[in-house]
Length: 348
Image (cartoon, rainbow, N blue to C red):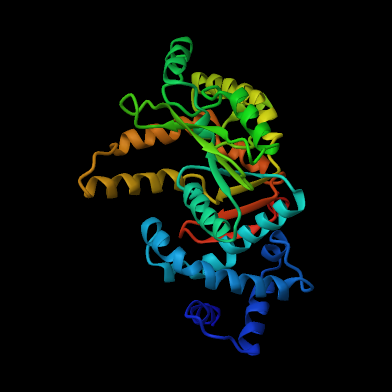
């Protein structure tokens, strides 16, 4: 029923009072989701009215982007209405209240859709007049030369990504500058090109920005905090050997250096896989699809080793589970790739 009403909306048709009331009831039916998005019986009518206007304005631009990123837009119309549009509304309202750039942290493991979320939110917000910067923890990787030296000091750092491979001080400096950005004085934003040096990656030309309203700062362990080292005595799979436990303890200790960076975030969302092992399954599927299209990819064994390396560094059960109760909002992602939105503390 609700999907049919949304189809009428994007077709430019006027809704009757009965259809508008159905949208209101649909919005309030999931109490936890409504609470997480700040929707109450008192505010729901205004929120719905605003979102209807946003939907009709955004949808023609959303369709080609959705075609490139996900598939047929009609399959994502409900997600656009229930999740992406209200998140954008929430960001816009928070930025207006703050009167300075809003720094939104986004934590998500591989395959959770961080990049897709960032592109869709940017599309929505910029159409509404909000200058949005998508920035990643990946953009703070140390230079290729510095990482070679780091690898010589610690041969366990065979992949870029674990705590210790980023220039945290640079991140703090940039976020501080963004929080006090002078729109008449452009700021250089570090960028990282993963294709350089045969896939090892390196810094590339910075991006000049000015007059930023909202920053979407995402990464696979954004917001993660050190845990009690004794948890590694009985750590979950694939932390199996004493060498695995030593690596996990050292990565845990490195997280302390990131805490001042997380303090610059105004808010934290978590894209939370209800079963963290889905990230390996989905990465395997992506590699198979890439190879079927004629592009090179990793073998199943290489994918397993790659994904498990990061689980050994910061295991989702040990680092993301405790963070759920601290997060401002959690988007649960299920095995069928459907999503539900909750307050973080409701999952603790």
